[in-house]
Image (cartoon, rainbow, N blue to C red; front, side, top):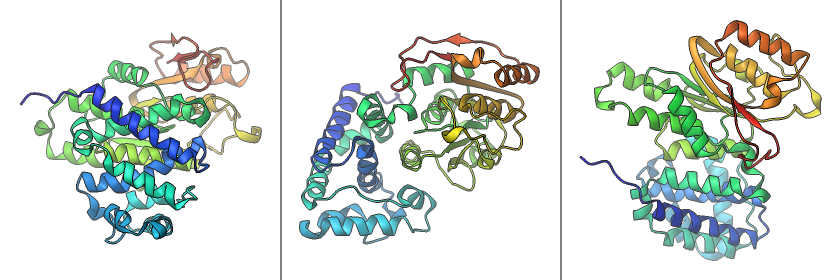
Length: 359
């Protein structure tokens, strides 16, 4: 069987059409930050129908039910759907819709969105891959300075190059402690599937792949929703009690609950903890309010013996005195630092002035 080719023009066109729906939201006073979150609620309902997994949603609270509701009552019913789905037994549905609140104020805005989403070429969307289209929407949102979402998104070429160097395999336990919208996890999964034959995996490997391969943590709830949606559309299972994306702060005791990894891929946030407070991690030998130094400690402490990591950090991590010097010494004592690769300034949608470094 020939591998399926992806028509980037179709993907780009569908992403552009989805992004244009944000103009409808803008006219209703929805902020840039809320654009993709609001669309995610609606797209989950629609995409669940398109890929045949509506059984995860209770009857009476699905896309067709929303579409069939009279326009004058649709916004009220939509808010009922959000509340109801946020209290479901299904872990994925509950996590995506937990504490969900719509920012839409006008009934006509919702009706226009439902109509426009339904008009999209969903056959082509499924052929191109709903996950790639949704990822394109996330990148479009991240590239818009007004959205403020750039801090949660790492450029795909940078992710892919790091994954290609690290060469993840089916037996790896892969972690991203600052997962954002899960770009590293999705790229690692794609690499594994492209470089092995799942049909040749043992039963133990197949079970491990589904239940004990990918782990991530994200502490911003709306970004956590986007990450869950991204994993869902790429066919990666997420269970808050096992593998997948977890909602929590890696620099708190939540981070200590992540299992040891054989491979960590991440681009943690730059800056200091709010209020200058120290992380609540008993295992950190060198407490500091500097986030990147805290994440660096988590990374080398979170690796199995023989494990490996690729991480993006601001280059001041290499020169920071005092506690930074102690952490670097601890890193060199515990790990083999293979490569330091300085990257050009301005390659990120956020923190454009800070020159990043890849370790």
